[in-house]
Image 1 (cartoon, rainbow, N blue to C red):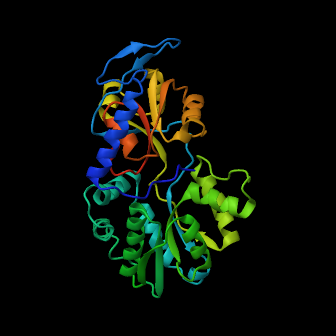
Image 2: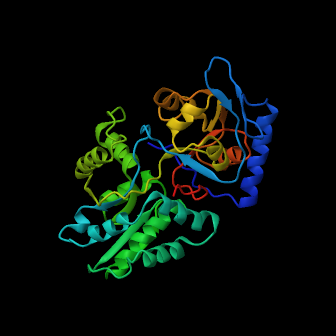
Image 3: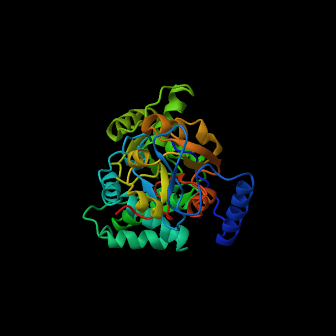
Length: 343
């Protein structure tokens, strides 16, 4: 499961100022073990690897989780089962969206909304037209309400779903219903909302704990097929069915500056572990205890950290700390619009 997103968007000037103030306070507490203002490396005690200094830069890139530490969180259409009973068109239409949506595309959609300040409606309609989804072969009818969580990515995805359904003859609209605790019961009931863009791993564990208790054994894993199979079974218990998962993921990820990645020829977390020791990790306070954050990076990849900086979960503090060379590696979300696509 992911660290929770921060859905409140600060104005650029306010967010940047807060980041600078916070970083100044952190710096005043002492210099990090190996973070600095430029490239190069120095030997670190107790390690055979050089302590690679952070390299400042505006562009951030995600290092591939090549050993699959993280739980999958691919975008998947979640649908009220009763609402589509006898309708053979709606889910296949949503699957056409999944087929053309990968993580780099999702980064671009988020950049258009979060960075370029365009509306989710404008971005969604442009995407549907460019992908050739505005003239579907299938046709349907009837009222459909697509729900969205209260953050931009969900609103954009929900609007894409509604635009495709409208192009096929449905009367579809989008409504925003807070967080998962608020919108999932509405989807399960099916009266207020019939469709929601969801995240495979996070939704699987949310339903798993609801159905089987807070201490239930995890069903979600790094295996997409197995996780979708588990989600499908859990969905049957609460009246939900699902379309095909897209290649696009919004999951925990770890980023460095592009300048740092280029200097050390890095593309994966494994390549980082082979090249560098004495790293400075930035992320939310819980990162030091969560198995998919610092402990997992150390145990799965053998990464060596000289210091941890307590910042935020994929937010402006972590990204600013990376860009300014205060941390080497930072926890982000893989579909963040400020990231540089991998291809």
